[in-house]
Length: 182
Image (cartoon, rainbow, N blue to C red; front, side, top):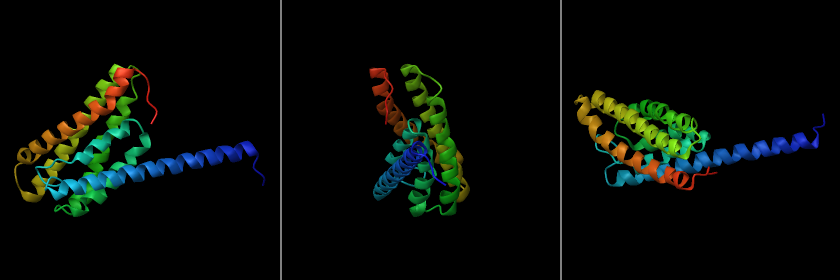
C-alpha cells in the first residue's frame, strides 16, 4: 500500500512533534530531579521543612500541556531518596499531578495578558496548597505528629517558590502583552 507524499510528510511532522515533546519531558524531569537532589544536600528536599527549588519547574505546565507528564515521573525519581518510602513514591506523585492540572487548565481560559498573569499566579498557589496538604498528611500519618505542624512550613515554602515562579514566567507576557511561543 502506497502512502501519498502529503500523508507521509504529515506523519513525519507528527512524529517529530512527539519526539520533541518526549525530549522536553525528559529534560524538565532531569532538571527537577537534579534540583531536588541539590536541595537534599542541604537537608531541604524531604520532611516538614523543605524548600524544593525544583517545584518552580511545575509552572511550565501552563505553557506546554504535555509537560504534565514530567510531574509524576520526576516526583517518583526525586523521591527515591525520601525517608518516607512507598508513601513518597506512590502517594505524592498522584497528589502533585492532580495539583498541577489547574495550572494548565486555568491559564488557557483567558486571552487577556493580565488575566493570564493572575490565573497563573492563583493556580500556582492552588498547586502549593494541594501539595502542602498532601505532604502534611503523609508526614502526619507516618510520624504520628500533628497535621498543621507538618503542613505549615511546607505551605510557606511552596507558596514562596510558586509565587516567584509564576511572577517570573508570567511577567514577560504581561509587560509585552503578546503570546509567547515556547
